[in-house]
Length: 280
Image (cartoon, rainbow, N blue to C red; front, side, top):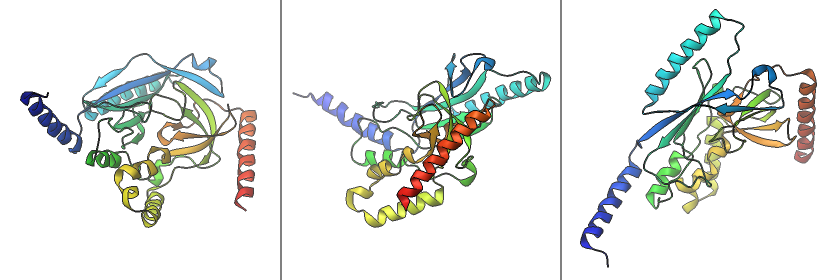
């Protein structure tokens, strides 16, 4: 039999928890992970090489993260100016915003409120401001709240740095659900992520053809989730279509040989030719 004290505590906890779920800002911390080349840059070879994390920092606010990046980016630039021949072993910074006080199911989604990638000079390369998790204890309106937090609304044109046919590197890290952790792979772009206008048109079409539960935020976050925020690429290593989160795609950090460029270009041309025949 439930005691009066226990029942009162349960009611208070439920009310407090619900307010916690529904408030505009969820308490969180920022996990900063500098990624380094796993070996000397001279010994790295395409089509794939490894990276590693040797330290992790935790910060309370995004302002602290930005200050850290400005400070270390300044050191990096000054050193580069003094020693132009210097090649840093730092590849990039991955910053994950981790919510506090929630139980998550990491096999279903991730555990982040947002993701940011910074370059060695401290400049922001890209960010995902949407969440990629839904707390396991959610129900009712809470599902819709988190559904809206998980939605992808499209990229601004200036955020789409590459076009079909461009040769790129794809970085794997925890939170990149499409690529192996701690690896960087050579690939060629096949399709770019949708823009804000394109996602708006997709949502308009979806809402015109669906009703009821299908148009609640909880259901729509699966139709308009992080899987849309990806480049379609052909990976040199596996010669098949794969998906790379927009923020994880970089310019090549090493010289790409003419042989590898020809192989990637042929992969791209063959794929486009086959796709065009299916669309006829």
